[in-house]
Length: 78
Image (cartoon, rainbow, N blue to C red):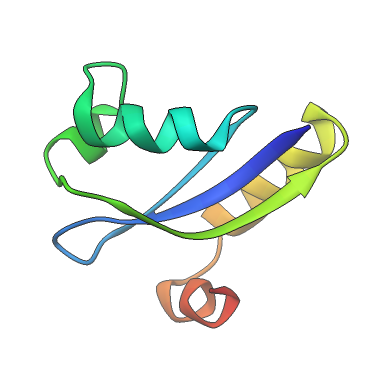
């Protein structure tokens, strides 16, 4: 299973990503150098949305679609 997820950063910014292990990835964003550079500067982050996909291809397509949304559209998705 693959997950597309949205994080809300401490400054209110939204971050979109993809992973196979949602709990581990959120933990990395909050407390590890393995988290994205973008989120490391905006800790703590909290998970506000996630969706499961059967394969990486579908998940990647959804990730790109979400990244292309305006902020207001992302908030509606949440």
